[in-house]
Image (cartoon, rainbow over all chains, first blue to last red; front, side, top):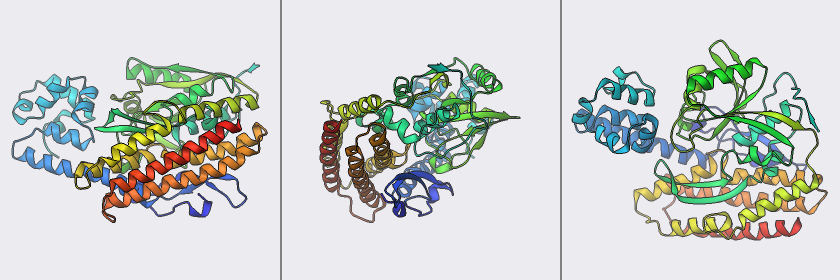
Length: 131
Length: 333
């Protein structure tokens, strides 16, 4: 890549930041140039973010119907899956998946709620309801 | 050979394309062993390719365009005669105390962290990736002064946030890892060290293993070929390939460009002008990776019809170009 080809497309996903890229200067030396972003990266980043957002909207609707627990909503909002939440909280995966059900979640003792809240970086009071 | 660890003051932040090579280059430069990011990257034989279907990140396979985390730091131990201290901690409290103590001694300290829990990252970039690297060069009240080389300027990070990022759980959990140089040899890398590093990279890229190097690319090409053009999960998979390539760290094309910069430096250090010509060839291969990424992204966006077989074909071309490139590089050293 030549230095005048370093993309400066103003990616929304970079939020105004610039990233360093290596490119060939006119004298042939390969140097660092700051890039405002590239369409290809923006597309795939936005796609991954929107996959989480769509999933969060679906889960929110299921929580409102009582078909899922707020824990599942917050898990998705924190861009986690059950496996990662299990590791972050130190609670076995099969238990985490069980706690994604509204009825099971409603019966959790304070100490289990505290572990989830800590793993998700939330106060317990926030964890037990939708935002 | 080993001098005392005199630091150049004040600390100088330099923008880098990749976190680990940037951190280590800035850290060593601070301790008066001036080194560029690209030299750190090449000298540690960091360039690679691996497609590991059984290692999952958020349910999608690991596709790496470089060696595993920490191999840049470890790869520099011999060629630069540096020794690092690596410390991990059982609890965040211990980790924070130790970091504060090292900063109080005036040291600049490297950390492994999660990206997700660092609030200074743009929200769209915050995913659960645990092998990020950054430097801490001071503390001001409740904030750490952070030199994150993938950012243009130094940033601040509240102590509680940094602690959470250092002790994030999951794949590649950092366990509070911090590192700092103990002793640093003062000599520039020898021609032999440069050649050894290049030979190691060619061995990895041409390795007779199915998931590594150019064979790994062909394995991924076969996987791509089998994707259904109508399945929603195919979009996620292809988007993931491009994200692993262009976003996580600096990705496939980016690493090829860094390595091309290294080959220019290597041509001088090892007094082997042919390496400069090979550098040009690698730049062209990097452009091929960018073309692949753009073609894939356009399909993800729906601008072009999803055609896994076309992408697979491009990937095979890249594999063929890299195979012949690394054979030529191997012959040159």
